[in-house]
Length: 427
Ligand SMILES: Nc1ncnc2c1ncn2[C@@H]1O[C@H](COP(=O)(O)OP(=O)(O)OP(=O)(O)O)[C@@H](O)[C@H]1O
Ligand SMILES: [Mg+2]
Image (cartoon, rainbow, N blue to C red):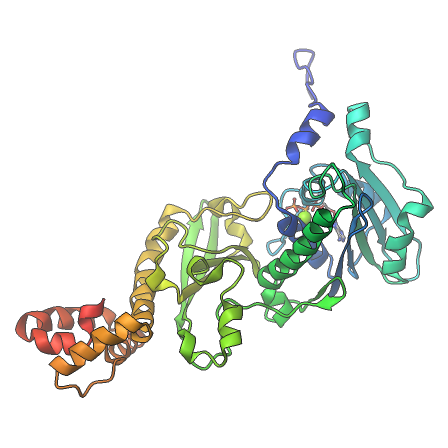
């Protein structure tokens, strides 16, 4: 119990709520954070509707999950909702629903039903009301304001989140104009691409639960960064590491892939698709998953730099939510920081991946082929250009990569022509 010596200095609701708007979300990641909530509520089907209507543009995210009771809904709208989390929970801070929504809009309405065919509860959290009263107030919206959300829900249990007054998305002047319309259309496309990537395991049915997500009525196809269905994708084998954080022991898993070079993809269209939102070069590197949900991608998380020659190298890094503190997941679930001890563990397997990916790249780029022809002719012209890669891949798979490196180094001294002809000069 606080004594008379203590004094409460509650934060200003107006000031704090305004500053929480800039916590680091962009539009697609804000939608994704709401979908995390739907996943945790057991939803199987999630519909995202992004509808342009000038100043009345709305975004609705509807799920068929467990829904919330009237009291549950009020608690859900508290900044820092009070609840406990189990180990596979995608939620963590009790903030996402509010911070993700208000990062894009000024009015958030949540309509929810717990039992199919039962009554719905609805509450609105409006930034202007909070600012006017400098208090964390929520209100019961009128029937009119929830009609569309209720229609989306039908008779199902589930939850609909509605964003209105999208001041962070629409221009203040002429929100009705062509520029605003194009912006909304672009955001809808970006959101679809983002969701297809970050929830790809759920869309594929590879996660604990299979999800269907639609954006403006279109069903999303998963975007799997590793193109496992391509015949020439190489998988270097799954590695698991145990990591200790105080009392907690967690698992980190690394799964390395080399994607095929352009001409070895089944079709040119698939190659373009696999390029990803950031395009080939910037999509190389680690794809970090937390509870099967992708939270960070593009680049090597500080282990090495982006390099054109490594653009075919991608690897999945999975960590358990027990290790959240170690990975310092941020509120927007958009960024983690790979701790030093894990970087050390990953350095060698990633280095091996990069050597092999570099070889595939060189074997299929103009310059790489010329180099190989040259070394082939020095060795008698009998060896295919993929000799170096084949040797390295075989050594990696046999767990003898270090031995091959020692042999290559010796060979370079005793028979440099043979060393070159075998393609070792390329690494
Ligand atoms: N779509 C939904 N269906 C059912 N319950 C929901 C839904 N969205 C939110 N909730 C409830 O509201 C609570 C608050 O959600 P919010 O996103 O703010 O925080 P969180 O998910 O607990 O943590 P985080 O800040 O990491 O997202 C959730 O814990 C959940 O109990
Ligand atoms: Mg959440």
